[in-house]
Length: 465
View 1 (cartoon, rainbow, N blue to C red):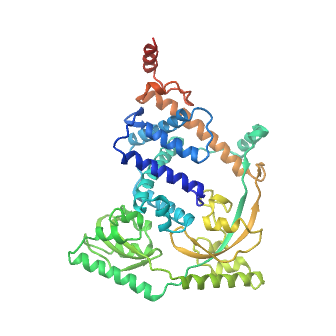
View 2 (cartoon, one colour):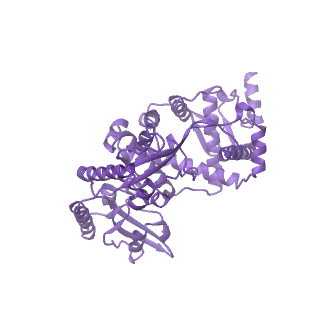
């Protein structure tokens, strides 16, 4: 999932959500089964929804849109059918980080949770439920594809030979990429705000222990971990290493089911934890997370401090690298002189759309070596932090060369090899899977032959006679 979301992308998602809800909200809608793949169906409404989504995104179809979209959905169902046979599943623990990241991206792009709900005319929990299942499906397909593809490797000689074989028009264009350093400060939270959070958590514990309500009900209403809140605060079975260390220490010391912990502070905020079950070295718990409110005065003070740090760097009192290492509060970058790492490529290079929305807007206006004024952004944990950024390097868009863009050429070759494996798998899977297509859709010129079985094609010809 990308870290920068354009207004156009948000509008597309909004239209997709509206169309999804309208299908279920209107009892008088007459839908139609277009494809059946195994025990999975592709409905006409699915096709219309995806087609609208793609058109709003500006996609140009090379052929009949209904045919192209219906086949893409059919392929997705093919993967999902095989995933069910192979018992490939995606847990909430896998989905929630993507779900939280998507929510944070939308809030960062649009400005606030309230503006997001107003824009979509929908409450955030409703949006999250739609996103949740879309993400789960996407991750399931991804896991199934990874299993099919396996570990494909190519040698440097193969990459060079592949590059030589490309026609001039086939050489990939590498978009503009940037390298960015940051120094962050977390706005100071007043002790009164922390005490208020602790008071509320103590009150929740007391109400549960008195039998006035349940831990799950309070988690749904008040927990700021939106992923688990909808499940009553419940987390999947997890090992100690999967949890925040302070959270894990307290959780694993609970001994009795339904026992509620003392208040524990983690990097995400303040929690109370309720034990559900222990299985060896794994644990299943519920929790309620509260985050202290950050007052505007604290944000103002942090941005002023960062602007002062920026001035000191410009005046050569110390370097940006030194400032990031000593003064930055960002645990992911401070040991790397503040250099941001692209999780998609595991390199320091970002396309502009891969940067956090607020940072992309700032970096777009900087010259190489220039340091920004302080600004605020939402980090990957969903917290508001104050930042100054430096544009370390900008590589303008260009045709790939084997010397400067070896990794891009290698990725292109790997993509080609993976596509060949998946194409072969689809052809084989078509032969072994029950597939039925509505006769009105059989005339499509599909990318992958093999969808239409001989008996169905014969039946169509007989109908014509």
